Length: 280
Ligand code: SAM
Image 1 (cartoon, protein in one colour):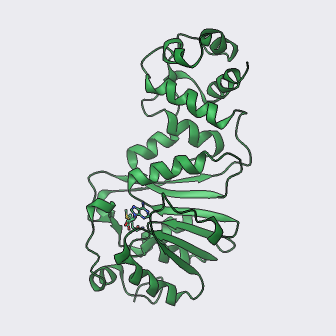
Image 2 (spheres, helix red, strand yellow):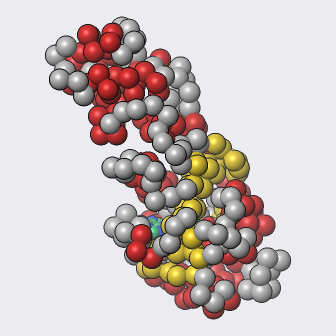
Image 3 (tube, protein in one colour):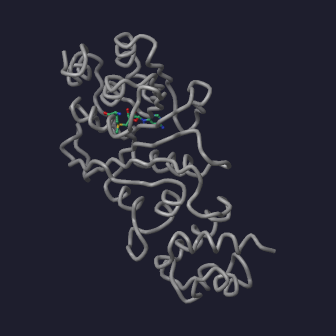
């Protein structure tokens, strides 16, 4: 029995259900329920929210979210071996945990959720980054979620909160800061996981802003930023040349020197440039 619920400790769950971690699924499990509860708390008030959890594994974070009072947790897990362990959690919290076995990159969970919705996940890093970009770039805003609380490799977390002038500043920073307010809320050493990964990790919390910080078309902004940072060492007039023959004029109209490099331009400047690009 653990301190947060009447279920067995996670080590025992892993042993009983033979959940030896698989590297191919990016499995580094959190075994300390005090820590998973602390992460769940960072997601904000949960009692009036449905929570979408991606990659619950043996259920450490799931149990944290439920013990913190989540109205409902919808958990999507790719590894079928974890489903019986998650069913035990579901029995302990009747009607509050729904589990879908499958790939989160291919499942649309929205018909299973009632707003307000928060998202929480400790995911393999590549899947986490791909989902973060998708969650930040829907066609319309505000998105389906109120907040995202996500574990990342520390270096990726630093890219999400990076400011102009730093090496970490790029597409992830701009997309995250345009429509949300990302913060690193917890840092974790490799030993917090079993097995320990090679690098440190960090939990990033992002609240969705009611509207983007500056006007811009999402597709145009993504295109401009991708091109600018693809050749981050080049001056913008050459990095962006393929986007418009009169790029120098458009940069100047957006208040950006054509000789600047992507790394030096603030979010506001990229949004102004996206608006200039959409002028005929
Ligand atoms: N949340 C658990 C924890 O904190 O201990 C497990 C974390 S482990 C880093 C990542 C989990 O995501 C694993 O259980 C893995 O099977 C699952 N996973 C990996 N790729 C996935 C995908 N595409 N869709 C859903 N789950 C996935």
